[in-house]
Image (cartoon, rainbow, N blue to C red; front, side, top):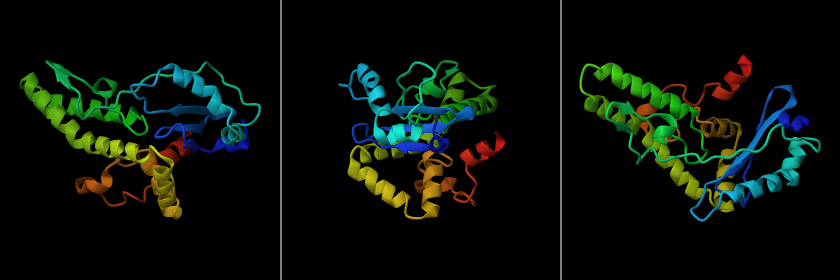
Length: 223
């Protein structure tokens, strides 16, 4: 891999919008390279298979990865459910969390944080209402999921529509790149270091929300 691949890269290619491609550095000179798209009803799965080699051959991406970069394994693709605002979250004594609750970000496809959060919310509901009926547990859990995730989900859905075209992405990049503070906090927001809809949910505001070191930096230090 090239020296440039030691950084995080995100590409907003016009024909992929509102999706994006990425390259994240890995140990021993490797990189995690991939792309995500919002699949439409008329988009066949085979479209992604065809798009893979086309993306990797594009000059701006090849320049970052380096001319000698080769894949370590076959390409893999899978659908990511993102409809926590309208999916069934419980059935009898079962509480659905993570992918089973379709708790992923509609804009980025990220779902690890949501899986951990819904698992914790389910456990909290069981602890609070364990001696009561399953219906009470489910009601408490569903209310907690709506409170913690639905506003962020709807914000991401709106932003997905706004980034379907180059003009929307250019406007967002211009605002995000205005200065060092906006660049830093845009990156933190993109990686969900604070809630997606934090700015419109004052109940989640706290001192130092925009001044912390960030999850990626903390993880990098620990390696």
